Image (tube, rainbow, N blue to C red):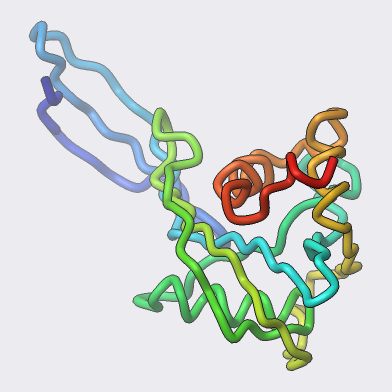
Length: 180
């Protein structure tokens, strides 16, 4: 059963997300407040080059205080289709464009408190076509052969949830188990 929304108001406007406070009535008649992080949809790419490498990126993430190995990703701009966002983010973060984008799936990152959804694409038939990186991004591209690309996940070296989920969705198309 779905709770009834009594009232809703935004209590914080930020650069990346807003925070909304909802007052809801539960199916048992009680009411409660729920904090909601409003975040635009985002995209994640699993780019595979002609040499059979997955192009990861390494960048510093201030929230966790360390450099993280992850897949290229980014937020969609207002009313921008996910595929357009994916193509732009791939060029900004890896300097490559994809002839082929295959939709692998879509999911919510934390539906208990966030509206953010992620759309995952497999990007293939890559060629060089760099776009300027965002001014706050300092990214190193890290190509890893498909045969070894899942090893960091199995060894707890990949700690980014969107990357882990995207690799899981890409596995049937990459057949990593055939390489290890």
